[in-house]
Every structure is written in C-alpha cells, then in structure tokens.
Image 1 (cartoon, rainbow, N blue to C red):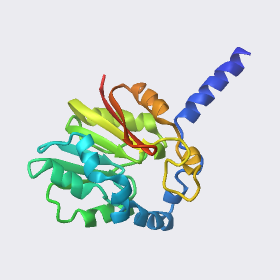
Image 2: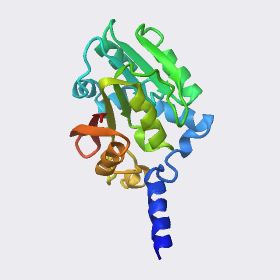
Image 3: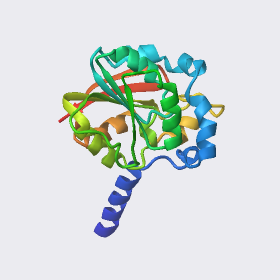
Image 4: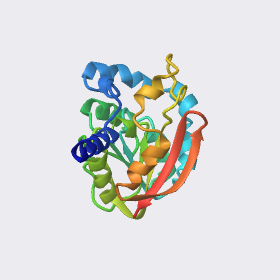
Length: 223
C-alpha cells in the first residue's frame, strides 16, 4: 500500500509539471508554427491583449533590462523597446529558430533589442543581468518548468522580478470557437501556477486580474 501511495505521489508530481495533452502540437512542426504566426501578431491581438496596459501593469521603466521569454514572432517587442528607452535593453528569447527569425524581422529597427535562441530546458541567458523576466501566454507550454525556472532565477538581478501573464483554466478564457478550449489547453489554473513557481524558489509579490475572465498577472521575486 505504501508503495502504491508513493507511486501515485510521484505520478502526480510528474503530471503537475507537464503541459496539457496536445497543448504543444501546433508548435512541433514548421507548418504548424507558420499557421500560428498570424494569430500571434497584428491589430487583432492588440484588441484582446492590450499591450500598452500590460506594459503599465508590469511597471516597466526607462533604463530597465527586460527579457521576453517565448517571444514568438516578437509581438511585444515594439512596446517593450519604447518602454525601456534608449538606455534600456530588451532580450527576446524563443526556442524555435523560425519564430526567432520573424521576431528579428519585426525588431530590425529596434536598436535596444537583442535575440537569443533557447532550449526547452534553458533560455541561455546571462547570469544576474535582468530587472524583469516576463512570460506572456507561454508558461502553459513549458515541457520542463522546473529547469526553466531555475535558469530564469539565475538570470535575475538581486531584486529582479519574474512576471507570468497567462490564461485562466476555465471556460471562455481563451478566444476560441470552443468555449471549453482553455479548460483542456491550459495545464494549471492561477493558484496552482503560483504554488508551483513558489516551489521553485520564488515568492509571489503581486497577483491580480489582468484581463477579466481571461488572463491573470502574477509577479514574483527570488527567495
């Protein structure tokens, strides 16, 4: 009986750290990513994502060094670049070269933006350089959240912050023809995400609704 309980406990930990089944299917092929690219940028996304309001909510100031983990096609880069100003720095990271190439094209005229190719376990960031590392609509795609959070923690300056902006795991949270899409697509709801990240050596310092019924913002610092 004890053995069965232990196996069940280990299994629950493993499942806790895995994406929802099928959540990453569209990202596994170049064709799938090409199809996703159109939904990741443009005025239609501005309407639902409210990027300027997000910049304000993240308390981004001129001169900061900000890292965009899972930048995708670079949707947030113009907004981040403007917010940190000429004395600031933006680092855009993604694990897919084709996405990163699109991000480079979008950010070609942004002098304070640089790019880095990461992996599923390591964003390949320098140590102790970032004021803010933010993950927009991407944490639920992490195959190896513990490893990623460890590397991200190392990249933060003393007093640096980690921001997670993601969807609630509830009906209607994501713009999709299927109202229950977020229930099956999102791995963990807000409270479980916060508990998981705090278990990786962070402390939550802010939790708030960003888009009512859709997205939350959780801000963390290193313990």
